[in-house]
Image 1 (cartoon, rainbow, N blue to C red):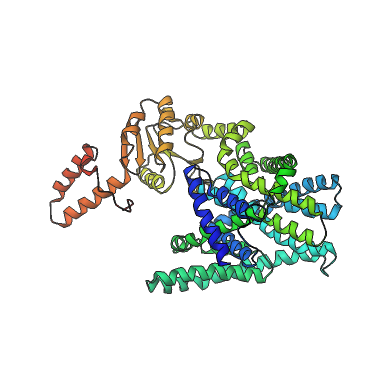
Image 2: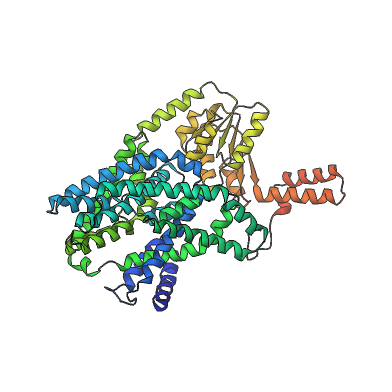
Amino acid sequence: MFANLLIILASSLVVIALFQRLRLPPVLGYLCVGLMIGPTAFNWVNESEDLPDLAEMGVVFLLFSLGLEFSLSKMLALRRVVFGLGSLQVLGSGIVLGGLLMLFGMPTTPALLLGAGLALSSTAIVSKELSSLGEIFSRHGQNAIAVLLFQDVVAVLLLTLVPVFAGSSDQAWYWALPLTLGKTMVLFVGLLLVSRWFLPRLFHEVAASRSAELFVLLALVIVLLTAWLTHLLGLSPALGAFLAGMLLGESHYRHQIEADIRPFRDILLGVFFVSIGMLIDLRLFASHGLLILGLTLGLLLIKGTVVALLVKWRGSDSETAWRSGLALAQGGEFCFALMAQMQQHKLMPTDLGGLLLAATFCSMLVTPLLLRLAPHIATRLHRKPNEEAELEEISALNAGLHNHVVICGYGRVGQSIGRFLRHVHQPYIALDTDPVRVQEAAVNERCVHYGDSCRAELLVAIGLERARLLVVAVDKTDIALLILKEARRFNPDVPILVRTRDDSQLAELKAAGASEVVPELLESSLMLASHALIMLGIPGQQVQDRVDQVRHDRYRLLHGFYPGADDEQ
C-alpha cells in the first residue's frame, strides 16, 4: 500500500506540474496518471484493497467542502430542482439509454438498470470544476449540483437493486426504493438535530482552547464520522458528508473548517481520479478506438440534450439549459461500480462492459474542457427569446426612472452603497450574476435584477443613458473593464465610480472611462493611517487635510511596497 501511494503521489507531482505549465485542468492530469501507471500501461501499481477506500475519501471531503458553501436555506430553495429536475433527468436519460441498449440485444431489465447507471454523472469532476471556475452558484451550477445530489441517492438504490434483479437477494425493488429514501430522511433529520444543538457548543469549546491541532482533528472527525454513519445505513458516504457540511454551512466556523480540510481533500481527490484512470484497459483503444469514440459522443449528446430540454421545459433560458446539459453530459464514477457489480452477477457481457467503461472514462476526461468551453458552445447552440422577454420586463419596470444610480455587482460592497443611497432617498438599480443573492434581495428590494453587467442590451434596459451615476462594484478588474467599455458606448458623460482591489490597473481603468477609481487596499491603509495619527494626538483637521491630499494625488504616497512571502498582508 505504501509503495503504491508513493508511486501515485510521485507520478502526480510530475504530471500535475506539467499540466499547470500547459494551463490544463489538474483533473485531466490525475486521470492521465491513472492511465499511465495502470495495469494495461506501465503496471507500476499493484492491486490493493485499501486504495479504493482511500480514493473514496477524496469524494467524501469534496462533498463536505461543497456542503459548507450551501447553507440549509439555499438547499431548501433548491428542493424542487433536486427532486423535480433530478428525477426527470434520471428517468429521461435512463429510458433513452436503456432503450438503445435493448436495441443492441441486451435483455430489458439489465438494459434499463444499466441505462439508469449511465444516466448518472460525475459528482467529483463536475463539483471540482464548477468550484474552480466560480460557477457553483450560477443557474447552471445550481442545476448541476442539485441533480448530482439526487443522483447520489439513485446510485445507492441501483447498487441495491443489482442483486435483486440477479435473483440473489430476498428483497423486492418496491421495498428497496422506500427503504433507501427513508434512510436518507432519517440521516438528514439526525444530522440537523446534531448540527443545531450539539456541534455549535463543541466547536465553541474547541475554539476557546485556541489549539489549531484540536480544530483540525475535530473537522476531520466530523467528516469521517458522518461518512461512516452514512455507510452503516447503506447510503453513499459522500451524500452524508454533503449533508453534514451543508448543516455546518451556517456556523461561524465554516471558513476555518474549510481551510483545515482543504489539503486532505485535494490530495485524496487526486488519488480518487488516479484510481478511476487505472480501471481503463488501454488495449481497447487500439482495437476498438472508433467504436469507443462513437459511444462517447453518443453518451455526451444524449445526456446533454435530455438535460437541456428538461431545463428549458422547466422555464429556464436557453443558455442555462445548454450549460446545464454540458455540465451533466458525462458518465459518472458510480457507473463503474454498477457495471462491475452487474458483471459479477452475470447481468451484462464482459466485452460490452469494457467498451462502456472506456466510453464513460472518455466522457469524464473531456468534461473539464467542455465546462471551460461551455459559454462559447452554449452561445452557438441557442437563441435567447426568454432573455429578450426578461429584458423587456426589466425595461418596462424601470422606464420611469431618471437620474438614478446603477450598481453593477451587488455583493457586500454593492449592498453597502445601496443602503447609503436608500438612506438619502436616492433611487438606484443593481445588477448581479448570483441568482441566490438576487432571489434573497428581491424579497425586500424590487430594484435588484439578475444579469451580466457586461451585456450592452441589459445596460440599455436599466436606463443607463438616463442614469446619474454608475458604480462598478464587481471584484474582478477584467470584468470592470468590460463594463466600462460597454457603458461608455451608451452614455459617454455619466460619472463612473469603480471599485478595485489595488492600484495595479488604475491607469487602464481610467483610460477605459472611469471617473474615479477606489483601490480597496490603499483606501483601507489610508483609513488605518489616519486613525493612527489621531490616536497619536495630531489634530483631526490636520489629519483630514493630509488624507484629502493623498486622495487628490491618486494615492501616490502609498505607491510601492517591499514584497514578501505573503503579499496579502
